[in-house]
Image 1 (tube, rainbow, N blue to C red):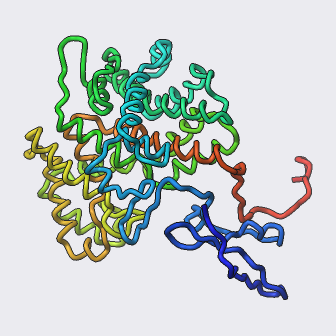
Image 2 (image 1 turned 180 degrees about the vertical axis):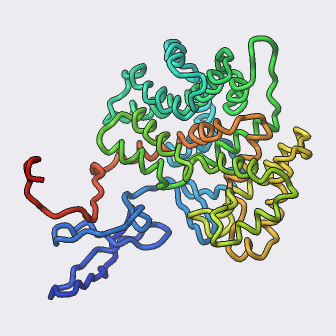
Length: 432
């Protein structure tokens, strides 16, 4: 809970005799926050495009320090979680605030693994989508439609209902994601298996067929688990803020998460790892990299190297450090070091870590760069990348939704700086 400082901020406005006192609040870590909520009653409000300097809520879930390259989930550094924990344990942590004991973890894992099936009528629902529909378009539809199948637990004021829905979303998202892939491939859906781990089950549903047995590589399952874990939450980003904004209206959690999926679909957010592969296709070969690096350094050239640098992190993305190791493990496991696309990616990585231009501007490889390479190596098509991002981000979305609904919140209502025409009288069409 935030604490109010004894000394408020004072806002002096030209032409106004008295300054306006604004409370200052301190969180547990991070910069202090000036509460501008009372400005409206004084006839003013703030202008902050993109809300980049505005805290819209209090949250105890995730903390980011972009300058230091720090990412904490409930206080635990992402590096420790990636090294010592796993995705489902992190899901429990995000939802409940503390790491589970052995018994609680086993019960949680059992609950998730035994709720991975979706209503059979959803199979028919999928047939309404064109085979060439983008998987994210499908996910927006089917996740929102879950509220029509699971309306037995949609009382948002009931804590038990909120947790049941959280478990259902985490359990069923990989099933829906794999179904969207199979639909595009024209292959039969593969039912989930309760005897498999979370990431292992997802890969099985993606690549198995009824024709023959499919065994998931432990290295690939571990890599997929890490991809889910490293994308599980990232504070008040665009999609999480969208989930909160939709949820603030009282919308059910399935609809709120569907809104988050729509926001994630944007190329500036969840589509970044797709953009990495698109860029590599444009470059074409390792021989062309020097020319494209030269273009990237030219401020008058619109070309940009995707997957390097981050809007929040001004230091090395802490998730990228973990993903880099996983990337090299996957490439060694699959023996695809000679793949031309992956060869380009490795050369760009080397340049970014050694070239003075990239180092000075802190344009380090980010998590999207490495996750895109891993997913490409596994054999997952580019259009599925953002779907996998959405699957991993689900616990973060639902944890923020639960935190908001379980506390004191207001319906979201941003203001605007109006630049349109002032009041004017209507003119009859004959006189215009």
